[in-house]
Length: 121
Image (cartoon, rainbow, N blue to C red; front, side):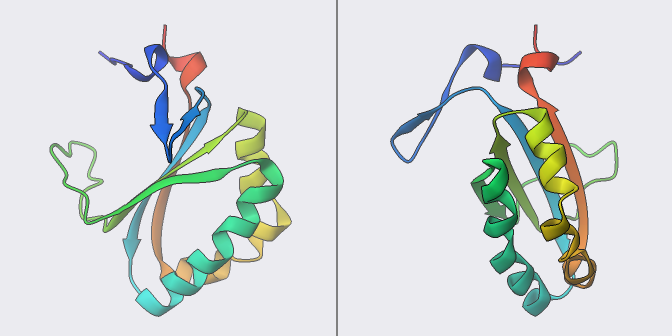
């Protein structure tokens, strides 16, 4: 059973209201901190053309349950976009593909897109 509480509420961030939008979640295992920091420097430039924004980044998140084997990641990052198309366009963009080699040396990533308006009744 999935319970979605985000549909009924809006999230406040930096004193502005963020409307419900598509979220992209990255679960990251950092393998090379220098490469990861370099990769992070390029992130905002790949998001901006598609209206994407980093909502928050957490280091050493606390895993409460892990039946799918996702634990042992060192960071979680949450992004938002206005549409699902913007998420896929950003992910498939030349700018993002130009840094994939750097990403692969930086760590391992699980990236998930969630359209809250489609997934919550």
